[in-house]
Image 1 (tube, rainbow, N blue to C red):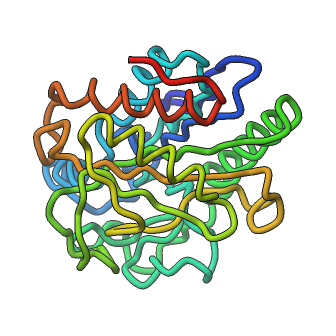
Image 2 (cartoon, one colour):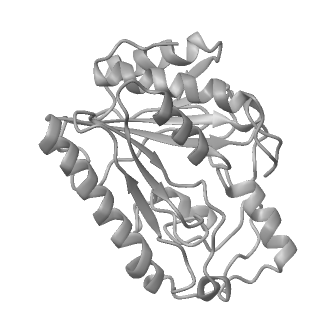
Length: 271
């Protein structure tokens, strides 16, 4: 995979910040060696990337970090989730296997073949998924060591209209969906998010149409000092769908995310 950019990047924040903005799905980059194992034609692949990529979420996190009074850390995936999806379980625990979207996707958002039947996905898990998981685990451990806690804010986006792959997409599709975990998402974190996005006149709902949030497995269900919240932004609030340019809504969302990181860091939000 020598033709690929760095597969992920940890961008430093303030030494005293417990916050990691995790951006796993913003990239469209697929190394040539991985592209060779995808059965879609170039046009079909481009359309799939339009649907599956959380476009501009890396920019939202970048602008938010610049606006925040206490700069959060950022962990950004530089490869497409069509290479590996770092937020899936790498085994049979992953419910998205039912639609061919485990750690390595074999089906598209519309249920079509993405990789050949029987494709060996193990090498991609070894080369891409596991190193990502180890690096994110180290990033969280470093925040724990530095501040006594870690707060993962998982930055995603989702389409305004349900796609066929969604297992639980029948519910409301608010401007901002807050995904929670019963162990790792304290009520105070949810309240801070509701206030931050509310100030931007963006309604929030919990766990609809997506639920849960990302915590590295080493800490999951074990370390309450690691808290986490998934922020799923409906794409029509800040961009042209599918896969189009960002609009002025991006700045509004970044400002709300900055207020959330400042609230979590213990600093009064500004702006």
